[in-house]
Every structure is written in C-alpha cells, then in structure tokens.
Amino acid sequence: MFSAICLSNSQPSSPNFKFGLELKQFPEIKPKSNETTIQVLAASLNHRDVYIMKDQFMGVTTGGIIWSDAVGLVTQCGDNSFQSGDRVLINPGRGWINDAEGPENPFSMLGLNPCTGVAAEKVLVETDEVFRCPDHLSDEEAAALPLAGLTAYRLNSAVFSKCGVKQGDNVLVTGIGGGVALFALQFAVAAGANVYVTSSSSEKINKAITMGAKGGVNYKNKGCIEQLKQLLNGGLIRAVIDGAGGALYGQYPSVMKQGGIIANYGQTSNEPITFSMYQVAQNIELRGSTMGSRCEFKNMIKFVDKYKIKPVVSMVFKGLSVDSVQKAVNLMESSSQFGKIVLVVG
Figure 1: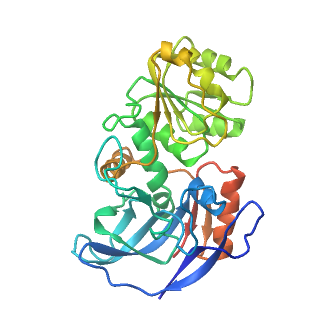
Figure 2: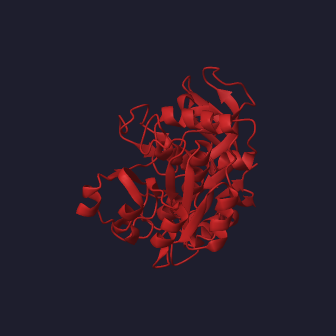
Figure 3: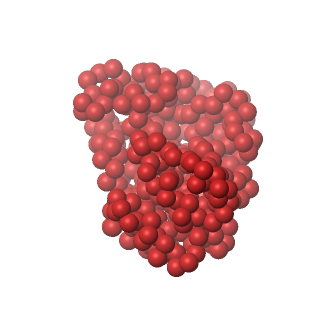
C-alpha cells in the first residue's frame, strides 16, 4: 500500500475552493512491460492545481490523485529501460508525442482524472514518459521543472518555435515570479537574449535583474510602456512571452519591431486580449501555447543540463499530508511566491 493526496468533496479549507483534500491508501500494482514504478521524492505545485480545486479547470472530478510535477527513484521497470534507484523526471502530458503544432491524440495531463497524479509516495507511469534527471539538480529543483519548464521551453524554443528566441533578441516576459515566467527568463538569457520583465512588485523585478534581466517595469503604473521604451534605449521587442493577457496588449506594438511575436500561455488577469488593426498593420503575430510534446520535454531536459539551469524554488513544505499540501496551495493562491512551491514527500 502507498499513501496519496486526492481531490475530495469534503469540506474545503477556504470558501475560495470548491473541493477539499484527503489522504487515501492505494494498493501497489506491478508494472506492465511498458510501465515503470517510481518512488516520489518531491513534487511541485502549479497554478493549474489551484484552478482545479476551485473547479475552474475543464473536466474536474473528485477522487483522483492531484498534481503533475515530480522527481523520484525507479523501483521497478517493466522492460529494464531503467534500473532500480535511477533518479527520473516524469513528463506531465499524455497524448502529445512529437508534432510541432499540437497534440496528435486526445491530450491529458497528470493530476486530473483519469490520469493519476504525483502527490503520492509512489506512481505508476508509462516508461516512454520517464526521463533521467540531470545530476546538477537537487530533488527540490528537479520537482519544480516539468510542467513550467516544458511550457517555457516551447515558448522560447527555436526548434519547435513559438518565439524562436535567439542571441541578441529583445524579449519581454510578463508577470515575473511565476514558474513559467522564471523559466522563460532563464531560458532566454541562456540563449543570449536581452530580457525585460514586468511585475507589480519592485522586489520581484530586482530579483529578476540578479538572474540576468536587463530591467523591468511595474505593469500597474500607467506609464509603464513609456518606462520600458526608456529601458530599451531605442531598441525594440521581438517577442513578448505573456501569461497574463489584459490591458497592455493594445500598447505592445509601440515597443515591438515589425513582425514581432506575442506568445500567450495564460490569462490570469481575466481581462480580454485586444488584437486590433494596430497589431495587424505591424505584422505582429499572436500565438497561443500550452505545455509541449514528449519530444520537447526530452529536449528541455537536455537544455537544462547543458546550461546547468537551476529552477527557482520559493518555498519547500515537508511531509505528504493534507495539512502540508493545503498550506502549499494557500501560498500559491496568494501569488506572493517568487519561484516554485515544492513538497518533499520522502
């Protein structure tokens, strides 16, 4: 038997949530020839997991194990692709193999029924979705990588291109502090781009600068785009990597070069995106992007290993319990973190 945290119809911890959490016991299952059993060392939280608890995500049902990001040790592998004790990462997506444009099959993610999640002592997954973990990452850093790292890699990648960020490009990353935004910053800096950021927190902007950003502006200030122009000093933005949506879309063209790209992976501001003739006249492209393929996940891990990138971890909670998981969820909902929120399971 092993323990896991599941989404429940029990009383939620806050009126902001529709669902609660419960600790359940599950029987261990011997892996088939195409499966691997993994002992979870650490797991991490994404905004998606908060939306699931609020019933703001498609297809939410209770009873399943939550969360999608984890690092662990192989205990059994059905076809001997891995040895017992190998430290591995799990691709959080299912149904998307290598098509650059989008999933070839119906797409699903770990942590939402019918796909089991990783907030558990053990998980059983398809061996094709398991990859060796870079040695330079701690367990906490490794657990922080999968979903946000994959999303950011696809946004930046010049191979499966949304933005095709390259050396010398000016890039704007909005909402710095979140997991995807921080990976986008790290990946773009590693590619040699000049990265600028937005945030409502001067502290987060300053932290981003210590990580390689050229500067940043407070998006709540009415004159923030003019401030960005001053930072650019005559330069123009080639790519905007955005997870917020909202009011600034109408102003982006004034700081973007002809044919620039806006890659959007989320709309946390709940403000509609405006895309008018202003953008059309400058040949600006709006591209939606979420997650990525198994092939991109593999390449993302290689990129992280090559440049020895370390995910930013904001807070670590210890122990697989309803209390520790709920505290992690509450912190994520507050949006006060700078980096990923991780749960050490073992």
